Length: 271
Image 1: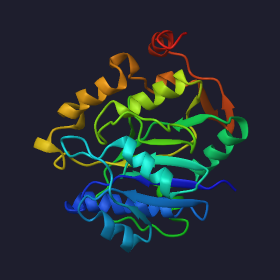
Image 2: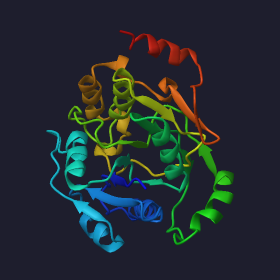
Image 3: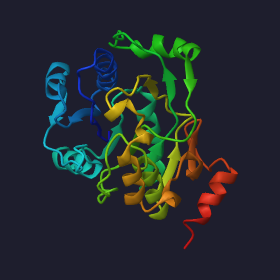
Protein backbone atom coordinates (compact mmCIF):
# COMPACT_ATOMS: atom_id res chain seq x y z
CA UNK A 1 0.00 0.00 0.00
CA UNK A 2 1.15 3.54 -0.71
CA UNK A 3 2.64 5.37 2.24
CA UNK A 4 1.40 8.80 3.30
CA UNK A 5 3.37 11.42 5.24
CA UNK A 6 1.12 13.82 7.16
CA UNK A 7 3.03 16.92 8.22
CA UNK A 8 2.24 20.18 9.96
CA UNK A 9 3.79 23.26 11.52
CA UNK A 10 2.18 23.55 14.96
CA UNK A 11 1.69 26.75 16.88
CA UNK A 12 3.64 27.08 20.15
CA UNK A 13 2.42 24.67 22.83
CA UNK A 14 2.07 27.53 25.31
CA UNK A 15 -1.61 28.41 25.44
CA UNK A 16 -3.36 25.48 27.20
CA UNK A 17 -6.26 25.36 24.74
CA UNK A 18 -3.98 25.48 21.67
CA UNK A 19 -1.83 22.74 23.20
CA UNK A 20 -4.89 20.57 23.84
CA UNK A 21 -6.42 20.80 20.38
CA UNK A 22 -3.06 20.27 18.69
CA UNK A 23 -2.45 17.11 20.69
CA UNK A 24 -5.96 15.95 19.77
CA UNK A 25 -5.20 16.52 16.08
CA UNK A 26 -1.80 14.80 16.11
CA UNK A 27 -3.18 11.77 17.92
CA UNK A 28 -6.01 11.50 15.38
CA UNK A 29 -3.40 11.37 12.58
CA UNK A 30 -1.47 8.65 14.40
CA UNK A 31 -4.62 6.53 14.61
CA UNK A 32 -4.78 6.31 10.81
CA UNK A 33 -2.49 3.29 10.99
CA UNK A 34 0.71 1.88 9.59
CA UNK A 35 0.33 3.50 6.18
CA UNK A 36 0.77 6.92 7.77
CA UNK A 37 3.82 8.61 9.24
CA UNK A 38 3.38 11.89 11.14
CA UNK A 39 5.88 14.76 11.07
CA UNK A 40 5.95 17.99 13.09
CA UNK A 41 8.03 20.74 11.50
CA UNK A 42 9.48 23.88 13.08
CA UNK A 43 11.06 25.17 16.24
CA UNK A 44 8.11 26.86 17.91
CA UNK A 45 8.04 26.46 21.68
CA UNK A 46 7.06 22.98 22.80
CA UNK A 47 6.92 21.37 19.34
CA UNK A 48 9.97 19.15 19.77
CA UNK A 49 8.79 18.03 23.21
CA UNK A 50 5.29 17.28 21.88
CA UNK A 51 6.75 15.21 19.04
CA UNK A 52 8.77 13.21 21.54
CA UNK A 53 5.83 12.71 23.92
CA UNK A 54 3.40 11.72 21.17
CA UNK A 55 5.84 9.48 19.35
CA UNK A 56 5.97 11.24 15.97
CA UNK A 57 8.80 12.50 13.76
CA UNK A 58 10.30 15.97 14.23
CA UNK A 59 12.07 18.34 11.82
CA UNK A 60 13.62 21.60 13.09
CA UNK A 61 15.46 24.32 11.17
CA UNK A 62 12.98 25.77 8.70
CA UNK A 63 13.64 29.05 6.92
CA UNK A 64 11.60 32.04 7.98
CA UNK A 65 10.21 35.25 6.53
CA UNK A 66 11.74 38.61 7.54
CA UNK A 67 8.98 38.82 10.16
CA UNK A 68 10.07 35.48 11.61
CA UNK A 69 7.22 33.28 10.36
CA UNK A 70 8.09 29.77 9.05
CA UNK A 71 8.03 29.57 5.26
CA UNK A 72 5.84 27.11 3.36
CA UNK A 73 8.50 26.33 0.75
CA UNK A 74 11.04 25.43 3.43
CA UNK A 75 8.51 23.31 5.34
CA UNK A 76 7.66 21.31 2.21
CA UNK A 77 11.31 20.95 1.15
CA UNK A 78 12.46 19.80 4.59
CA UNK A 79 9.73 17.18 4.75
CA UNK A 80 10.46 15.93 1.25
CA UNK A 81 14.13 15.55 2.17
CA UNK A 82 13.37 13.51 5.30
CA UNK A 83 10.44 11.33 4.24
CA UNK A 84 10.32 8.75 1.45
CA UNK A 85 6.52 8.45 1.48
CA UNK A 86 4.76 8.20 -1.88
CA UNK A 87 2.24 10.87 -0.96
CA UNK A 88 2.43 13.98 1.20
CA UNK A 89 -0.35 15.72 3.10
CA UNK A 90 0.13 19.12 4.71
CA UNK A 91 -2.56 19.75 7.31
CA UNK A 92 -3.17 22.57 9.73
CA UNK A 93 -2.28 21.59 13.25
CA UNK A 94 -5.82 21.87 14.69
CA UNK A 95 -7.53 19.54 12.20
CA UNK A 96 -8.85 16.10 13.19
CA UNK A 97 -8.57 13.50 10.42
CA UNK A 98 -10.21 10.11 9.96
CA UNK A 99 -9.74 6.93 7.87
CA UNK A 100 -11.86 8.33 5.03
CA UNK A 101 -8.80 10.39 4.04
CA UNK A 102 -6.99 7.17 3.11
CA UNK A 103 -10.00 5.92 1.18
CA UNK A 104 -10.05 9.17 -0.82
CA UNK A 105 -6.34 8.78 -1.55
CA UNK A 106 -6.94 5.27 -2.86
CA UNK A 107 -9.75 6.46 -5.14
CA UNK A 108 -7.70 9.34 -6.57
CA UNK A 109 -4.43 7.43 -6.99
CA UNK A 110 -6.21 4.60 -8.83
CA UNK A 111 -7.54 7.01 -11.44
CA UNK A 112 -5.02 9.85 -11.76
CA UNK A 113 -1.27 10.32 -11.57
CA UNK A 114 -1.31 14.05 -10.82
CA UNK A 115 -3.84 15.23 -8.26
CA UNK A 116 -4.39 17.52 -5.30
CA UNK A 117 -6.94 16.52 -2.67
CA UNK A 118 -8.61 19.40 -0.83
CA UNK A 119 -11.96 19.93 0.86
CA UNK A 120 -14.19 21.79 3.27
CA UNK A 121 -13.90 21.39 7.01
CA UNK A 122 -16.34 21.23 9.90
CA UNK A 123 -15.91 23.76 12.74
CA UNK A 124 -16.36 22.37 16.26
CA UNK A 125 -15.92 23.78 19.75
CA UNK A 126 -13.57 21.33 21.44
CA UNK A 127 -11.84 22.39 24.64
CA UNK A 128 -10.75 19.15 26.31
CA UNK A 129 -8.57 16.17 25.41
CA UNK A 130 -10.41 13.66 23.24
CA UNK A 131 -10.39 9.93 24.14
CA UNK A 132 -8.38 9.07 21.06
CA UNK A 133 -7.60 5.37 20.88
CA UNK A 134 -8.48 2.44 18.63
CA UNK A 135 -11.89 2.96 16.96
CA UNK A 136 -12.41 6.27 18.80
CA UNK A 137 -13.70 7.87 15.62
CA UNK A 138 -16.75 5.60 15.45
CA UNK A 139 -18.35 7.25 18.47
CA UNK A 140 -17.06 10.74 17.63
CA UNK A 141 -18.39 10.76 14.06
CA UNK A 142 -21.88 9.70 15.21
CA UNK A 143 -22.35 12.87 17.25
CA UNK A 144 -19.98 15.63 16.12
CA UNK A 145 -22.28 17.13 13.46
CA UNK A 146 -24.86 17.95 16.11
CA UNK A 147 -22.44 20.49 17.54
CA UNK A 148 -20.49 21.47 14.40
CA UNK A 149 -20.92 23.79 11.44
CA UNK A 150 -19.72 23.25 7.88
CA UNK A 151 -17.18 25.95 7.02
CA UNK A 152 -17.72 27.94 3.79
CA UNK A 153 -15.64 26.62 0.84
CA UNK A 154 -13.30 29.61 0.88
CA UNK A 155 -10.20 28.03 2.40
CA UNK A 156 -8.60 24.62 2.71
CA UNK A 157 -6.95 22.99 5.70
CA UNK A 158 -5.39 19.92 4.11
CA UNK A 159 -3.50 19.33 0.86
CA UNK A 160 -2.70 15.78 -0.25
CA UNK A 161 -0.62 15.13 -3.38
CA UNK A 162 2.05 12.85 -4.89
CA UNK A 163 5.51 13.71 -3.55
CA UNK A 164 6.89 14.86 -6.91
CA UNK A 165 4.35 17.70 -7.22
CA UNK A 166 4.78 21.22 -5.79
CA UNK A 167 8.56 20.98 -5.92
CA UNK A 168 8.81 24.76 -6.33
CA UNK A 169 6.72 26.99 -4.09
CA UNK A 170 7.07 30.75 -3.43
CA UNK A 171 8.36 31.66 0.04
CA UNK A 172 4.91 32.06 1.57
CA UNK A 173 4.39 32.71 5.28
CA UNK A 174 2.55 29.84 6.96
CA UNK A 175 -0.66 30.66 8.81
CA UNK A 176 -1.56 33.57 6.55
CA UNK A 177 -4.01 33.75 3.65
CA UNK A 178 -3.10 33.28 0.02
CA UNK A 179 -0.80 30.28 -0.11
CA UNK A 180 -3.63 27.75 0.09
CA UNK A 181 -5.42 29.51 -2.78
CA UNK A 182 -2.21 29.45 -4.80
CA UNK A 183 -1.92 25.69 -4.31
CA UNK A 184 -5.25 25.20 -6.09
CA UNK A 185 -4.39 27.77 -8.77
CA UNK A 186 -0.98 26.23 -9.46
CA UNK A 187 -2.46 22.75 -9.67
CA UNK A 188 -5.01 23.86 -12.25
CA UNK A 189 -2.44 25.77 -14.32
CA UNK A 190 -0.15 22.72 -14.39
CA UNK A 191 -2.98 20.39 -15.47
CA UNK A 192 -3.19 18.66 -12.12
CA UNK A 193 -6.59 17.34 -11.06
CA UNK A 194 -7.93 19.36 -8.13
CA UNK A 195 -10.25 16.98 -6.28
CA UNK A 196 -12.87 18.43 -3.95
CA UNK A 197 -13.19 15.79 -1.22
CA UNK A 198 -15.78 17.63 0.85
CA UNK A 199 -18.30 14.81 0.42
CA UNK A 200 -15.74 12.07 0.99
CA UNK A 201 -13.35 13.31 3.70
CA UNK A 202 -14.30 14.48 7.18
CA UNK A 203 -11.93 17.17 8.42
CA UNK A 204 -12.85 18.72 11.77
CA UNK A 205 -11.40 22.07 12.78
CA UNK A 206 -11.19 22.66 16.51
CA UNK A 207 -12.13 26.31 16.99
CA UNK A 208 -9.70 28.70 18.69
CA UNK A 209 -8.97 32.40 19.02
CA UNK A 210 -6.13 34.30 17.36
CA UNK A 211 -4.16 35.34 20.43
CA UNK A 212 -1.13 33.47 19.05
CA UNK A 213 -0.86 35.93 16.13
CA UNK A 214 0.68 39.43 16.33
CA UNK A 215 -1.80 41.82 17.89
CA UNK A 216 -4.32 39.00 18.25
CA UNK A 217 -5.58 39.84 14.74
CA UNK A 218 -7.00 37.21 12.41
CA UNK A 219 -4.62 35.80 9.82
CA UNK A 220 -6.25 37.67 6.95
CA UNK A 221 -5.54 40.98 8.70
CA UNK A 222 -1.83 40.28 9.11
CA UNK A 223 0.60 42.23 6.85
CA UNK A 224 2.15 38.95 5.70
CA UNK A 225 -1.18 37.93 4.19
CA UNK A 226 -0.85 40.72 1.65
CA UNK A 227 2.76 39.65 1.07
CA UNK A 228 1.51 36.13 0.34
CA UNK A 229 -0.98 37.41 -2.23
CA UNK A 230 1.78 39.35 -3.96
CA UNK A 231 4.04 36.28 -3.98
CA UNK A 232 1.18 34.25 -5.44
CA UNK A 233 0.94 36.67 -8.37
CA UNK A 234 -2.03 38.75 -7.32
CA UNK A 235 -5.67 38.29 -6.41
CA UNK A 236 -6.47 36.55 -9.69
CA UNK A 237 -4.61 33.50 -8.32
CA UNK A 238 -6.84 33.26 -5.25
CA UNK A 239 -8.58 30.05 -6.32
CA UNK A 240 -10.99 28.22 -4.02
CA UNK A 241 -12.80 24.90 -3.95
CA UNK A 242 -15.09 26.37 -6.62
CA UNK A 243 -12.16 25.82 -9.00
CA UNK A 244 -11.85 22.09 -8.33
CA UNK A 245 -12.30 20.10 -11.53
CA UNK A 246 -13.02 16.75 -9.87
CA UNK A 247 -14.99 15.42 -6.91
CA UNK A 248 -15.17 12.14 -5.05
CA UNK A 249 -18.75 10.92 -4.79
CA UNK A 250 -19.59 7.39 -3.62
CA UNK A 251 -15.95 6.30 -4.04
CA UNK A 252 -15.88 7.51 -7.63
CA UNK A 253 -13.95 10.35 -9.26
CA UNK A 254 -16.53 12.50 -11.07
CA UNK A 255 -16.84 15.95 -12.64
CA UNK A 256 -17.04 19.21 -10.66
CA UNK A 257 -19.94 21.25 -9.40
CA UNK A 258 -20.57 24.28 -11.58
CA UNK A 259 -20.80 27.84 -10.24
CA UNK A 260 -20.53 31.38 -11.54
CA UNK A 261 -17.40 31.98 -9.44
CA UNK A 262 -15.84 28.81 -10.76
CA UNK A 263 -16.57 29.79 -14.37
CA UNK A 264 -15.04 33.23 -13.90
CA UNK A 265 -11.91 31.71 -12.42
CA UNK A 266 -11.69 29.14 -15.21
CA UNK A 267 -11.32 31.94 -17.73
CA UNK A 268 -8.16 33.15 -15.99
CA UNK A 269 -6.28 29.89 -16.62
CA UNK A 270 -7.16 29.47 -20.27
CA UNK A 271 -4.06 29.38 -22.53
